[in-house]
Image 1: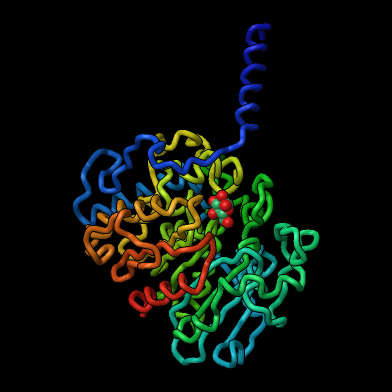
Image 2 (image 1 turned 90 degrees about the vertical axis):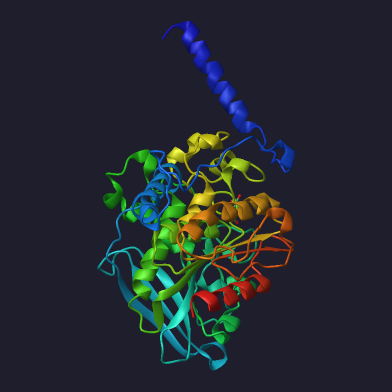
Length: 429
Ligand code: GCU
């Protein structure tokens, strides 16, 4: 290498390091949003207009799934066989109204395979019930304070408080997330609730995809090109699909009536799970933002470049090409929502969560609506939904596409659950 080339290389590396070191400053000014054109979900990659449900289902839908696998979330292995073991049963949970079980589901047909623990609540009734399935952030023990729920022993993120010691949950973590999981209300409305600690499936840190099911299933993904391998969101979604495999054979839950639910990064996950697995009857995204319901091309609040830098393991390697270059990505998030059609989808935003771009989340649904209409649904159920017309705390929940902008911050509240339960009454009962 000549001296001149070496100097050039050093200068480039220096510049790159400088760019990295620069602190990300989020844009919140609508007038500074770059010009963009959204890809049309109803035009095939070959440029043909999609005018029938058959064309959507047979041509366009598989194309969009493939684009998301290739450019955003990564490709997951084929569904593995699962096995399970009941760990505990409590017949008088939730003031005697529910049965609560813990069931380990193994990613393989033997019980030495990697596992996740399902915490399952079902109302006391003879018939299988519709249920909500969602991942949780801090462990199953965090959703209710009952000490009979097993305390997870897997890696958890340090929260700089007494709920975590040496990256393991402590007794103090019991019930800490209960405000986000209104178990009794869900049971009273006749639904089951199934939750899993997301770290059981894949610990949420960048370790080069060695731990969790990434490592355990490395053999099944070895033929996938490196840049297209599954990221953590795809891995968590894969776990949700295997949980559904289990639920389809659980006598207390009706596997045909399962709503997949998630908040924030787990809302991104519920969308990808619902988009890639058509068995989920209903999909709920709570404050999912960038890489979830929000349009990437708006680049307002959290951007693709920022998310890929802070959380390099969430998406595949290809997605990094679109850092500060969102327009080049062949898909955008309205198409993720379109993949859920004709099934019911509910996106919730919060006024205090501009990082997640509430307006971009609603716009994604608006731009997905033509697909819902093509497939014979009523879309929002009302005409003329526009971002300028949606007032806080006024849910749109009468159609197949639901939306609300709650006042308050990035969280899951009783108000949110109230809407999800009402929406479920219309789509799952
Ligand atoms: C960060 C991240 C978001 C994510 C959120 C969460 O704020 O930037 O993309 O949704 O964490 O999952 O809590």
